[in-house]
Amino acid sequence: MRRRMYYVMPDLASARRIMDDLLLARVEERRIHFLASPGTPMDGLHEANVLQKTDLVHGAQTGLAIGALLGCIGGWLLVNFVLADARWQIATVIGTSAVGALLGMWVSSMVGSAIPNSRLRDFDEPIAKGCILCMIDVPEHNVERLKTLLGERHPEAQARGLDPHIPAFP
Image 1: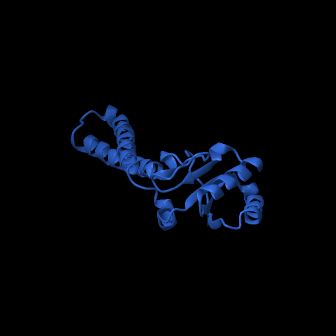
Image 2 (image 1 turned 180 degrees about the vertical axis):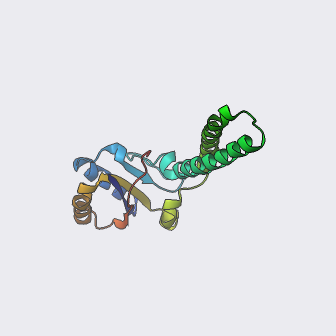
Image 3 (image 1 turned 30 degrees about the vertical axis):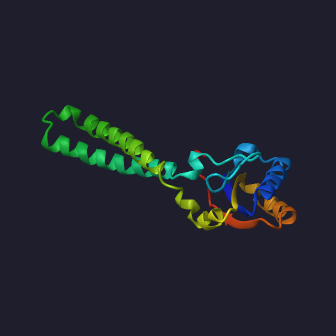
């Protein structure tokens, strides 16, 4: 299982140095994400993508659950009030649940892609002031080693905690 570590860097030069140190500590580049205010040059940094910046994943998960529930209810209503043939009852409920889940996931992920990531709300103020957020996805057994390394080599970095787990997609 991976955990996401958060660090707030005061400037671009510091963010580049932490990127170099993380690469030397054998953290894969695809596991390091930087987020800054729009217009900030991110040369030499692995910028966060849509999955980290927005609530797309959370929206898709929520839409999947709600869509499946509403599809199941719709299938139940069809079976009890419209369909007379008993052979199609189970298939109807399963089919409407699947269609509802897919539609709910699609619509909710579209909405979620337009909303900033709710997990990053605490970092809005530092980012607006020109700081750069560094998100590092590391295996559970490497968390303490990297905390020590970054604490020693980057006293300017503000450690801002850990996520209990990271989503499977980003």
